[in-house]
Length: 271
Image 1 (cartoon, rainbow, N blue to C red):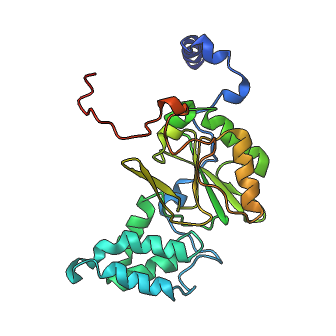
Image 2: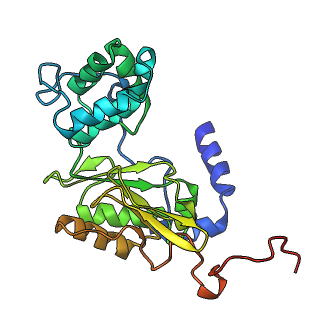
Image 3: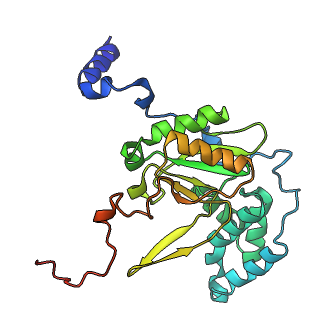
């Protein structure tokens, strides 16, 4: 009885404007699939993830590992654990196996448990296989409120791929999850695909574009329609245009008349 009264009291405090919103715009506090606590910090041997499966840095990754370690004094090379785990994840199809963690521990001459502690603390390290395209949907407040809202974007992705957040498509092409802020709040809503993206940086009136990947990008200013086009393009093996999806220049205003096109002469702004 007390619980029913509390729920009724809570509903009475919800603004009527929210209650009048279409069903598609409503959102529960927990929308992704539940994750068992042992998935977060406990390893369980599986046929595809156990210590008997060999792993080591090979080819360009081996050289890159050496370059990373060389940036640290020999007595402090343990500090390279995060970049080496990231490198291992990059080599291992975007996830870090227990063998990869053990190899990083061997390379850095540190107890494996120390590596496990780092890998289980940071959510950016995937400790189970993900799809070829790891779609991370930002559902933090700015993306939830910006543009069409991240709720509509997430629902469009789930409906188009036929899976819920936290799952992978049967063909192993797409994995979809919800994430916290991805650092593009002015272009909300947005998603990140895999862990590499293009970054545009302004220097005076010139635009410099840094490319850190060919098929991995942050997709900004999304709508349900544009995010479906992004997914279809990836599925066809096409190069997907990174950055804003509505024609904006990075995070500049939509209105051309309000976009700064030349250097400001009066830096005091008193005229």
